[in-house]
Image 1 (cartoon, rainbow, N blue to C red):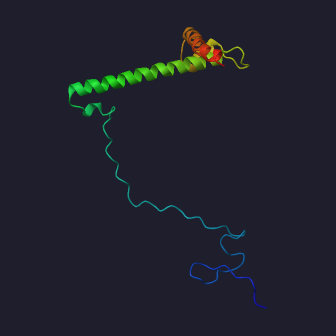
Image 2: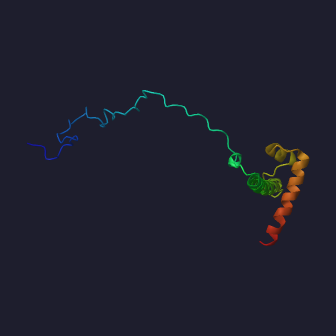
Length: 136
């Protein structure tokens, strides 16, 4: 009696061999393709010269002063803001209401500070946090 179930076929349309020898069957896993071998080494590009916000390409001294001053002010503001975040984090880590509160020495070790500086940063951070707590 002919088989009533259609057999899988390959891309050419001819039936694929049935049974245990077929790739993908539990007895024989599907073959994995390997990446193609490189026949040449891609050329190593010349390293680009280091650039600092394209300041080295500005020839007009007035424009160079304006742009470099603008960057210096932006970096200074970013550093101050990052310091505020450090202080807030230090104050939160030193909060005695936390079960895992850290000492000034432990905070100093984490931030690469001295314990005295860590204590000052914790106090500064507590001052930054106070106005937030009053509004809650």
